[in-house]
Image (cartoon, rainbow, N blue to C red; front, side):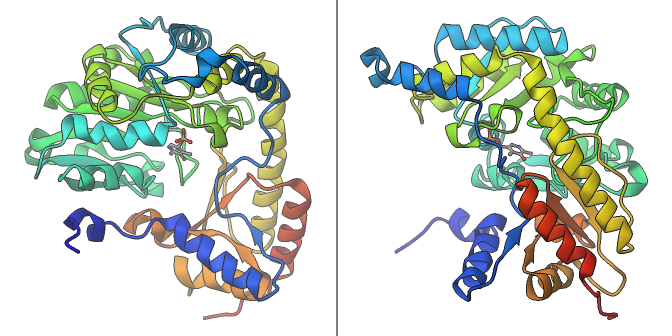
Length: 389
Ligand SMILES: *Cc1c(COP(=O)(O)O)cnc(C)c1O
């Protein structure tokens, strides 16, 4: 068989490897507790499931959906966006429903990247930005995220030569895996940078609805020029505990939305219509439900941070996202500390190095684990005697 180079070029998807490791441990009879994957343990709210039951009985929903979704869905998305961020979007030209944000993120590269083109990609970062670039034949220019710069890319360190060649820049706040947030002044400088160098600014905003304390994330499109510079990706997965149902959206620049529609309409046939009705229900839901859900995550966050601090791993509580990003103890790297936790405490965490070279020296703990398992996992962590290396 003669496979395309892209098949061998991509590193194995991080979570596939972790899943294999967990399966092996479990087969050996271990009681493994996973802080690994960011997949909400809290079920989809009942009122949303009720919509699926209802819509599934209507035979008009048994047929092919449209790629760009029901007009009612795009309207609900624009109303949500207005309610949440105060921005008016045209439901017909500035919004495109996605089969999950991941799908749109991967396909967006096909809109901008030809063979040899450059994408500016955060390191560490959600792997789909780089893999989407490679699948399109492009090259990644890494933008290191470091604690010194509050896990934001240092735009001033990007040379004019690279900036003039780059076609897209990916950013993601609240951030996976670091839990970092960006304020409006960062978005403003990213928008200005993108406009100056004619780069499409692609903001993955999958975590705008998982926030803590007195913080509430904003939209890149709130900046002057934001609608000109790019698009923002949203997802109902983390926002409404709907990872299994696959609904997201791309919003912003109409020409970019149109290009994404060109790609998608030739590849997929949209979100199953009964699921679109679930999405409408979710988007119209009372914001108190989001707040109550976030209170659960916030209390878990506090426990994780407290436990880590108690064993000498100093972390600041993240203001948003579903992750605690923690430095590994001296003498360890991401892989050796991850292995120690799995071998000695049957705890799974994600090695930071799996998100890019600048993630080395960190681990990521996810808050999407039920309270009982979390308590047991944290007790093991607390009791762990970390050997000197
Ligand atoms: C979970 C996640 C997504 C994927 O969202 P889906 O809508 O479930 O595809 C996108 N971006 C980041 C950074 C994520 O962590």
